[in-house]
Length: 453
Image (cartoon, rainbow, N blue to C red; front, side, top):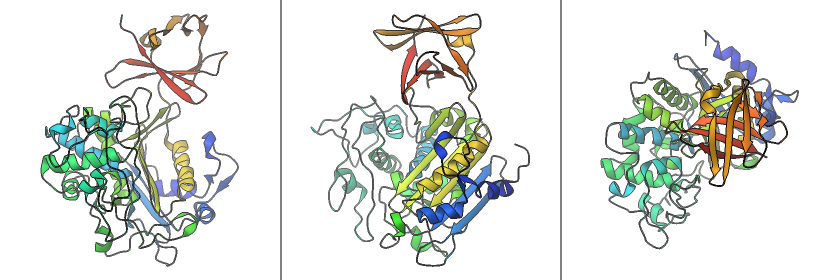
């Protein structure tokens, strides 16, 4: 990307945001960022755009609190919500790289002050990888936070005791069998990191991630809002009503406790992008690639990372929603661009979706199709449902369980279409380099694995 003026680019984009974002194409129904803030009653927004070269543009809009006139600036800190998981995962992988942790080791090898159990009190076999990927099958939990002075300890959160407002963390699904997003995975990860290093979580992540990246205006310390010389953004419920006290305290630090700015958030995503290219001094290429690899075939989550890797849209990062706040931070790796945006409103997501759609149109690139010879072969949707892919006259043919072969139609970005059915076909590689066939029908994606031989 050659000498792009990010400031001029984004001032223009934010003046014409699409309010009909589902198609992915700009419609005539556009609005300026300020109009969307008024429509959804979002008091404050902060946005930053950065390139791997180091160029950054950042700006604040609106006010830190709907009842004051203090302006949001590029340096105003917001609750980073579930982007905390993305940062915590990066820290955990640095410990894997240093040999302190093993991705596929049982978490019980590292936990000392608390131990994971199922509802019957039995110990499940759960790995560090499964915690990072939300595939450990732990309790379905969303963390709402606490008022000042009523905050339980992490051990109380794990046990569901004291003043906690969430159930105890237990193994409730077969570990490794499926993806289920839940903050409880990262509460266990938080305790595990504390136990294995003997260091408080906020201090550990400061030395592992925040200082080296550097994320200079970020902290997992829940006293951070009170320690700043400038006001932080205060949270708001839908309709613009302020959160009592300004924000909730989040003892679930790894899951939802980070305070940050968009500029800091995109610094991390750009560092991960560099790492995946082998250009990071912090994280190696293999582990960075794991962050961007679906941990369930056909899935949309890697290790602490939300994935969008489909034709016309390749980006990686994380979104967040806490009481009073919404945010996202993504990198478009083929363009070398990251965009992060934060609001101090629970109604901020509609606005953020329009901002993200503008970034998709500006920076997303198509997924390259795999060579035809590489994808030919037999795939198993399940044991009794084989799918045969062959090459005939330079075209792919598709034959599924007792059906006649058909020639697939090619579409941009490595996508193929069945000529007579509502069926999209795409070929991807799993983390262990096995070829996977994705079948998408009525918005549902199924996966079939290529058979050996």
